[in-house]
Length: 235
Image (tube, rainbow, N blue to C red; front, side, top):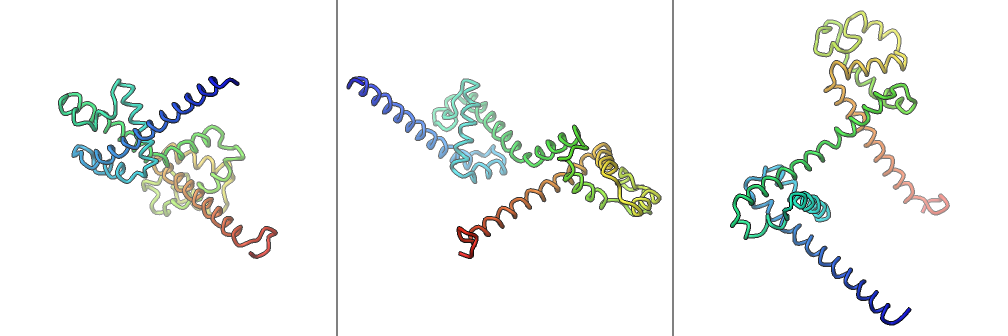
């Protein structure tokens, strides 16, 4: 490889590193400006303002990337929002500010809906193949929660009458024998048909309990591995 080729490669590499550093510095500057803008903008809703201000720097940098991409799609620049010169273009400033706030609000709403999204995805999987083997744990955990909400015999006309045991006779039969898996699936399907809001809340509870159990098991395994030596003996 000739000296000139090596020199060209070095210069190209150096140029790339310099551009990368400039991009990082620019993003850091925009992140700091975003924090300042969030604290000084009266039109920003309090919850949105607090969310932006409390974002760790890496997550705030991701938000900057998202907002920058959104602005670029409109042929704008996010940096305009933080520049003093934007005051000379009040109409653009208002449109830019309102658009950035609306987009940030959409992002926050999406994050807040994460639990609901997981529950809906779980419901879709159940609805497609309710009798599948992988749905058995869900049926086993969700059905008892629905069963626990069965009203007493004298309250058969309550708002929980969508459950199959809403009458005294049906509830008595339920006590005498446990339902088959197919019947439990039917109960869950009826719940989503007649009271989807409550059924989805109970499904979210099941998923939250599963997540908490998984975290607890992981912590327990991590603690056990720290207590044991490389051969399984006490460290």
